[in-house]
Length: 242
Image 1 (cartoon, rainbow, N blue to C red):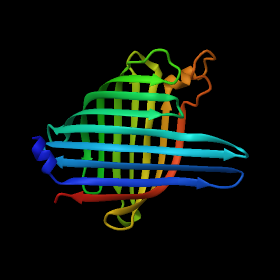
Image 2: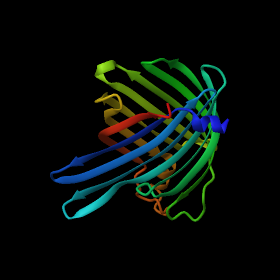
Image 3: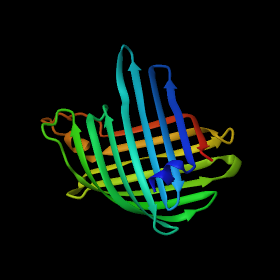
Image 4: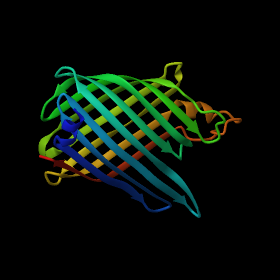
């Protein structure tokens, strides 16, 4: 099976994007992503690395507004045309939210409601076991989270393509206080068959950081629990091995 996956045609994607602002406030934000996906029914897998770095300057002072990176590995198994089971693992850091490391893995299932040349929409649910450590924490955390993820794509031909993915990941021991919401929305306009120009809106919220940021005795006191970034740039998608 693994030999078949390695030799099957793959899709290689890469992107570079960012924003620059000048004036009373000067800021820069740059991001990048590279990934490979192989779809060889009944199997599919994905390996992706992405990250971002940003700085804002007001007067003589400057502040790092983004500094993060994440690695994802996913293996899917088609059970039917519309149902997939999957395993995945990920690891990330986020210096702005004082996250030293979050590593997690889990299993789940995805149901595909729409799958056509011009539209895709699916919803997945998974159970995650993880390790989390924040700057200044004396103890590491090992939360078990539920993960719900809607994902969609709509192709409007020459007018462009809209896609989004959104994750809701509550700690099963504290649904109300310790939950994560993150994802992105992208509008892409094709320049060539392989090259596209993208407008990207990214959001990230961490309920644990939000609660700790209000506690004067916490090392996370005053830390912003959310990030909202707008970027634009280029992406490249190539089919290899065909």
